[in-house]
Length: 337
Image (cartoon, rainbow, N blue to C red; front, side, top):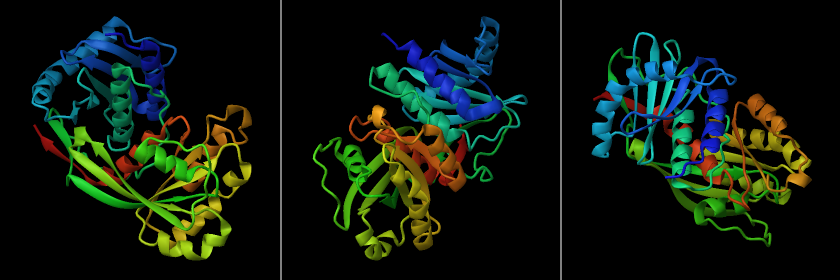
């Protein structure tokens, strides 16, 4: 089996950057516990054989137990703690397991969404599918720690209930690609001829989390962005639990209006969970808003941020999946195995 090792390394580098100083190392191992790829804490250092050997020795007994669970298709994700380290195990397709090793003082809950998204990208790389190594910035409540630290106890991570349904709204100026983004996610199609949304369009789509034995169903309300529809939008925004704010990276005005959209939505649904999306990144030569600017405004608003292309499909599934994962993270529970 041919594996794109360069893309794996790029993915691990993004992961290291996302986790920060609490990361000791990250390993991709096969079902027998042999290391396929690894990343050290410092980007300029490679993980030498001694470190890999030592970490593998720590992982091996736990992985042996996990492998038995994997063979029955009943494990998925889990954690294991020692006096010095915290481990996160995520199934990465049928071939591999993604292992994150953190410092003992680290919280697992803020790291888990990154680990899960990375494991899924690893599975796509192993399958030879198109995948971006970029990991979006995720912002969640770091004070909510649902995964308790238990020394020498292997814990399976699950969700309290198997299915969740959320009303999801999209906000942003007209012509930023909201409808195209939804159609790419729901139907995997892209229409070249632009037609503005009149009022609202409603569609449904599930995000399945096989490893968590869970599914999130989004009822997606695509709101018209034109100003003439502002008076009627309040009724569509009411009771929304999840939302995506979208701007066009080639249209600076749509970027500058994001704060207005944020304020409008929050006034009607103050408890809504939002992420920010910069769309149309395929139009590289026409780009008017830098990635760092998107990250900055997302930080100021307390939102996770990702850039997408509805035309090529880049990061579309990741955007919806990261929102779904942030929505259900508060329902995480653990059980000893």
